[in-house]
Amino acid sequence: MHEMSIMQSVFDAAFEALEKAGETRITEISLTVGEQTDIQEIPLNFAFEALKQNTPARNATLKMTMLTTRSHCNDCAAEFDHDRFSTLCPSCGSIDITMLTGRELRIDGMEADSEPFKEVAEESDPYASMIEEARADAAAILKEA
Image (tube, rainbow, N blue to C red; front, side, top):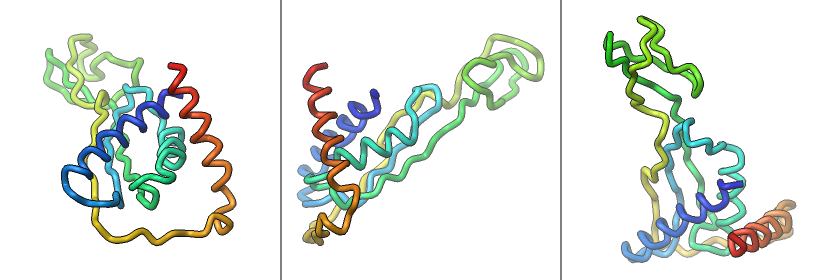
């Protein structure tokens, strides 16, 4: 599950930006992910939830924009959406295309502030222990890699 290491890299960058900004907590992280990256939305959300625990992002939300693949035909100038395997221009049949979107993986923004955290009792979250176990498993996997 490469989404775990990708999200760890996102958090590393976010925590560095948080420190430079002099803020204490992250409230939202916004990402754009292209379908050509093979990054799946559900595992990335799971990684976000698992890795944010006990960090300055523990109460943060993840806003994700998933982009379809869009290309430009260099022969007839058509622009079209397509899946990863259908790369022929639907207008003229050309294979001479330039991909416009679909390979993105970027942090679009982060919201942060210096408000104190409002702690939530662990017993009110039935998934807290499962998330903590997944986080420990992910940390072990990352150490092995």
